[in-house]
Length: 77
Image 1 (cartoon, helix red, strand yellow):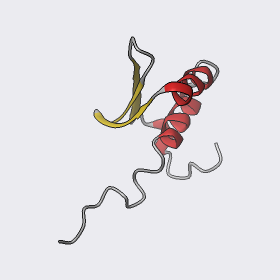
Image 2 (cartoon, rainbow, N blue to C red):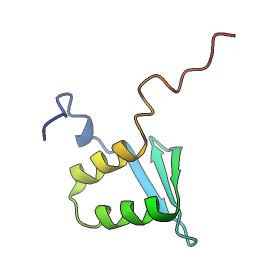
Image 3 (cartoon, rainbow, N blue to C red):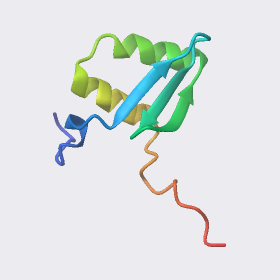
Image 4 (spheres, rainbow, N blue to C red):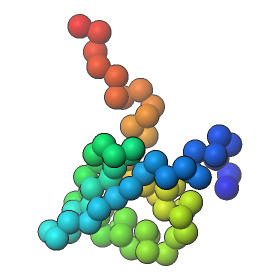
């Protein structure tokens, strides 16, 4: 798959759970990263049902909005 030079998507680092009220909880290595609600959750579940394992990992990585791009750092105060 293009864009996965480090083979990150082969590892099962992302996971998700659907709640009874229609929310989708996205996890990375067991930690809650993002919660999708409403239309975003519906689109995610629709796409997730039609992709393979690697595609699902990529879909979850994209849905977390690049949380590993520096925005997880705290301020230097």
